[in-house]
Image (cartoon, rainbow, N blue to C red):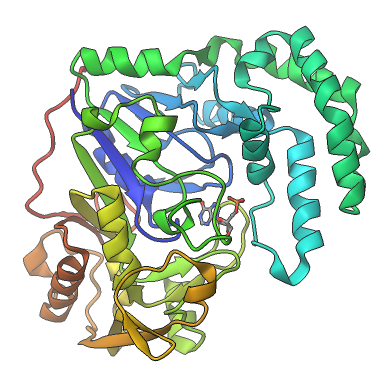
Length: 436
Ligand code: IMP
């Protein structure tokens, strides 16, 4: 019954898409359990590059059922665009399954996200402006529309009539501009009806699908979006996303129970990046940061925003390994650090004159933290052709061992380039193959 969870150990953009894609061969089903089209997976196969926001990356494998779980917020317009793009490139999309219980992102959620960010000015979260927060707010307030509502346009229209006055008032109070269409009942009803017609064949009870597949002994992969440090509960609040990317999120948003999970693979990069506002203790604003950003192509898949870059930070890393129950790690983009004379690793913080080893999970406390670094020799060699650990220079191996020690979990896969094949497998024993 193997169930594996893939979780980001940093602020998202750790390369989870590549990890999922690498492991996909041995699984029957890939389930997204939270987030929405704020995520962005870039997958490179040969000369083809695929950029996905909502559809689980497993879609690229003919044998995989890609599932959008009940914990996801779905913008049907994005989803249909992505399905069309994939189909246009010859990818079979009829097999995509969407939970009837996933919540919808509607145009007024996007308008609210934008208006609220503008209203917050300098205190803005730096969201992706995809309506993620407002959609999750409605879910908690029991005001949301779910994917199942697409199948009953009349009931959806009645629900919309009830929520729209509140949305109009909110948008007006926030000083939003050009939002009339986003709260127009007739236009929304038309959209809902059209989306329902197209998405109907994909909508199912995905929890039942997941449980049946587990009962048949298949191997399932639960794919988190964003990362642990953006988790609503464990991240640097308020500079977080509105869902739970941590491994536990798979249980409430993916349809799997805690004791059904056999493996949690944490994914991290050889350095750190962050998009949006919020404290970043190890941030590099010098030419080394610039060099890493350029070499690592650190530009957001969803927003096109340049990511902030910094040294790796063991403080949140240890925390992420603990709260996710990480059993193994995939370390991505180690090739990007070639040619940097000295590599720094933050091992603790100094906050108000005290040494702090624990992640404070508070934006306010983190804003006062200063990094305490350990220094490592860099290496000149290009790593992109290495396929075994002993093909890496000694300095790179030493850095990998140090990361492993501070994390407290084994690094079993290392990525040295974007291609599927640019991966070093180390002491890695794939779980048994599932129902294929
Ligand atoms: P939201 O998820 O759009 O509400 O944005 C909240 C915060 O999470 C912002 O700092 C975003 O930049 C960040 N964020 C959301 N999705 C991603 C992602 O996939 N990668 C990295 N950062 C993200």
